[in-house]
Amino acid sequence: MGVKPLSPIDLTIAACLLIILGLLSRHLKLGIEKQLAVSALRTTVQLLLIGQVLRILFANASLYFVVAISMVMLAVAGREVMARQHRRLRGSQGWLLGTGSMFISSFSVAFIALAVIIANDPWYTPQYAIPLLGMLLGNTMNGISLSMDRMTETLWQQRQLVEQRLLLGESGKEATADIRRQAMRSGMIPIINSMAAAGLVSLPGMMTGQILGGSSPMDAVKYQILIMFLIAAGTGFGVISAMWLLTRKLFDDRDRLRLDQLQTAS
Image 1 (cartoon, one colour):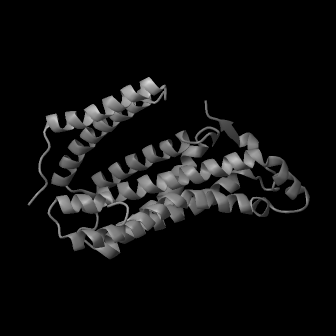
Image 2: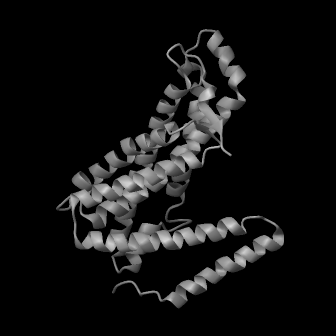
Image 3: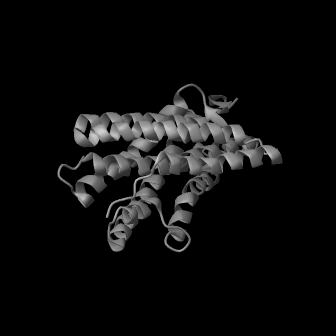
């Protein structure tokens, strides 16, 4: 038994709930109605577009198409990492750092999962590669953005303390060790919470989708466990890479703190 198709009326009913939420926001003066409307519109347009792209891609499986879409996903995720920072690296440095960290973590974990664990033939089958990479990038993006934001904000607030430790002879890594640890913990908290609550508080999206699609609940559970482990690994590797790269950016060869590399988001 497959998934029951949804009609435009079904989606309209769901959209009405957001309209009611927007009206409540306006009444309570929360100020989120515009953001809610824009986000809902973006979700609709982006998912409809990617649905058409994936339909064509699934019908014409090609490694080149998979790589091209993966690069677009990576570039957009890097832009989102940079956009969510209160104090971001100047110019394109933040985008390059975010995309580099996600490439190191998400792509390597995805390749291991596709080529070694799932081992489908071919390993880059779009039905497996694109959704898996999308979940890895999405969660890694959140972890990296949270950790980078925590790192830069704390460094800015504690810059005098860090500079005093530098004057006492500590290196940049030593002077910021506690800050980096706290930032990495912040980036890992969402996936740790998700794993701790899975099955008891929430049924993860992939597992729910497979069950709705008619898969055996136990098969769906096994895939969900795999995905959660992969996401945790990808997020952890990404956060660690981002903190290492960010530290190198904010300290020069003489271990001087370079907060002039940061700019406040407008």
